[in-house]
Image 1 (cartoon, rainbow, N blue to C red):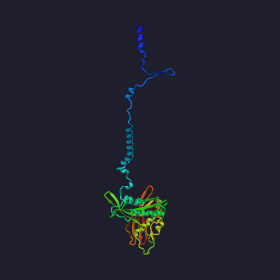
Image 2: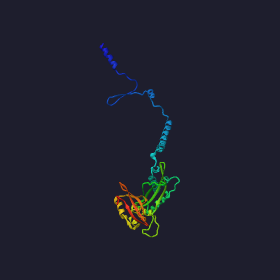
Image 3: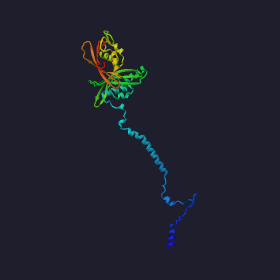
Image 4: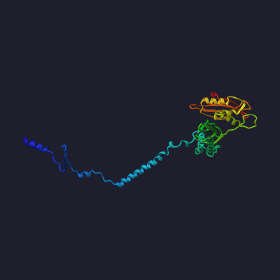
Length: 319
């Protein structure tokens, strides 16, 4: 019985032969059997057949979609997005901004943008093309224009709209030329537009009394202070003084502006004022100074007698 059991065990544990295949041994004594692949099973899980014509059509379609997306998408992204609008094409936001845009763009060879600020039906005395001609005149005189600077005063309400005094500086390297303008701005709803612009041209009045020449006293007062404050040429202003002139000299005022540290100075409007003498016409003028970190305005009263400047007072805190 025991022998029978042992024989059964040996029989059941004997490995079964697998059918087919090639048996071989390696140099180190290991044995391997190579069995043929079951072709029906392999075909059951094989990849489906490819239709190469359809694959080519789909690839071309994807390439076309990507190309169109790269061309059309930026257009859709840009359209209707306010952030993509050029700030120079925005409407003026105030009287000062309208005057600034008109003079700045007209003096910087952007005539279309300057013209866009003009009120419908208005014909300013100084047109955008006039501003461009003026720039070209100074470019010829200086040898070119490297920059255009602009300073505007506060708007003054009037019958025909607000007036804004401005100074345009034409710059070439270390040389500068200046022009003063008065721009009239009108408001219609929430928009601002320019109805007129006037250039304050230089006059050449006589510096002595009794010559018989007729001089506009306001122009003379403007020329006097402009020579000191804007052009920084006190010698020109001194030539306009009366022999009986009283007040700080042009040289003293020029020195005070320099010591204040002004990088830009301009006249912020001029208005007729009361005079204590019948022979003297008085004008109040505000001088605005701008430095690196500060901005201040100082009030002056200038008196004109005949064809010369008789007096200058004010400037408290500056002189």
